Length: 316
Image (cartoon, rainbow, N blue to C red; front, side):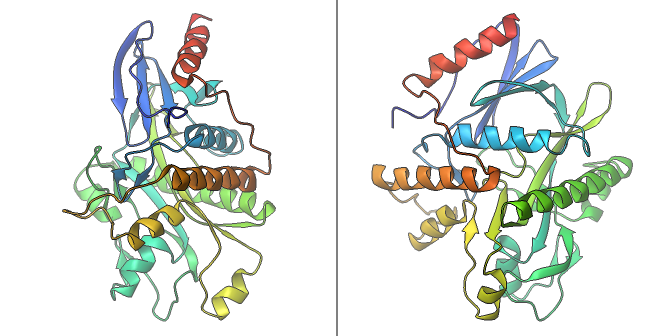
């Protein structure tokens, strides 16, 4: 797919280094600011798929930007500017090595663990007698360690995070507080769009002056799971699957093709036709989550477009 961005190797003025995550590539400029490029790579079960999804990076970047602006009164974030549809520029931060996962409903990973008979997730107890997609009495925080590319994120409890010194107790209290506040605001934003924010993850970092800020993406279909609110109760009472807005549809397609990222499994072939349907679903997600019509950026030469926009921003 020539109209996608899979990999970048830019050399910006005063560039110090590049960090390449599963989906985003982060350029350290002069040790003070970061240029984060959202690629069109698709990651599922912690494995990057061989083909990119048209407009996926733009969609994730623009949702995250809007959601950061909609929550900056509650929680400070790293964002300074968005000089290109696929690019965010922000303050250099040292990331905490945990992802703060918060779940309002028993879905996805939590439901899979529950079906195995487990009633504890990351040191948090889950009530007996729940059905998949039931609402928890209160949202639960189930952190995960932040894996390097190619590795799997792992569940971890608050106790283990503190015991292993991954985060200090003083900082962790702030992370928990910010996570709960962001999830509450995200739930309110989703409700206005006729959606339920089921679960999500937040990542935080520390600026050079020691301030804890929200970094990376927020409330995107890659980091979050949404249900349509209309008909949720009826579907639950009938034991039917919920209508979802997330990349769970990709995971389910992979599972149906015998892939869950386990050793020895091979990523199934994704035809160009299937890739187009995934792109269409991401556009649908964008429009439902933001309430805005998605405007496709010029993708005739994405690399040149991004480089020109970032250079223009850095020169100013």
